[in-house]
Length: 202
Length: 96
Ligand SMILES: [Zn+2]
Image (cartoon, rainbow over all chains, first blue to last red; front, top):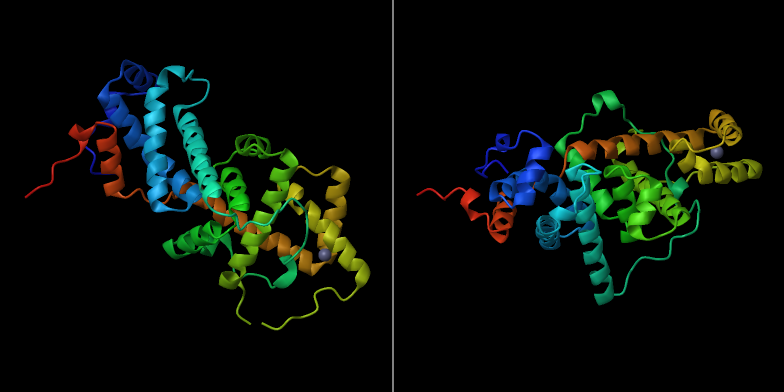
């Protein structure tokens, strides 16, 4: 977002930015957006998997944040608060979508090895020679986006957004054990879908 | 891809299934010391489970790097956001 003309130094710290937001300064709102919109959009696009809906989630997040800024008590960082609003907005979209179409996800609340052992060859991979290039990044994002929704949401919240398993369960309104099972299956499935990229040539 | 028999011995297969159920908690460091020891002993002697464990860790290592590289926010999307928020004054005028 290099194109937006706003000087982030107007508000030297989060406390002064927050004061500006609570006063309703347009500059404060612009600063907040410039600072946090990229991460909010990232959450949105990974969660809903659709550009148009991700844009709606982005807009809803900041509209809601500005409307409710006086309810923000500052117990967490502003970014954390925004991420949570974005996550909830994204989940709302997924729920609405689910009401429109029949879910293709099979129930996944059982532990199981299913297809885990289909490919057990080792990978040609070492963290040192595997800096994250754009090809690897695209491949990873694609593999995550192809996880079934029930697994994808848990995986993103837990592994990318960094919520604990308990927090993840809480956000999704599922039991901790269900969150654990889904996380387990998501990890194994992702490992499985990355295997073709990393298997050592024979 | 040819399907090679993964587990030659039946008793090992049972162990592998058990290990797999606990792998998640092991990665998250939530396993009791006893189960940890049991799992590590199995990993030491079972190559298949070791490979699954290693590649799983590699998968998560890569995924965690995505935290630092969020998908790009397109400029047009950012501009529309500023417009929706009535912050048009911060959008640079198009030249020409
Ligand atoms: Zn094994």
